[in-house]
Length: 111
Image (cartoon, rainbow, N blue to C red; front, top):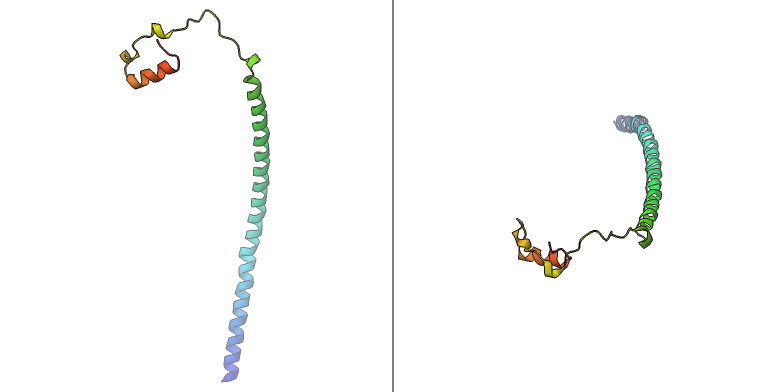
């Protein structure tokens, strides 16, 4: 009877190990392929990130150059400027109340 128990235990362990091996063959190889694909995607994303950083530096330089005082054109003298004493009642405009009128006047908008 003990011989039968040991033999049953042996075959159960052998079946478990065989199942483990078959599972590794099926699922293990697939995970290696997926890992390779993920590595390629990571490399591509790193390349894209590097390009974005390069473009960002280029845009920063262009913005700094465009914002220099000598590159900003002066306003022509033909543009009329409103003075506070010539201020219109901006509350007549639909949606403009006293609060917004004060804010617009603070920004130099009177007409």
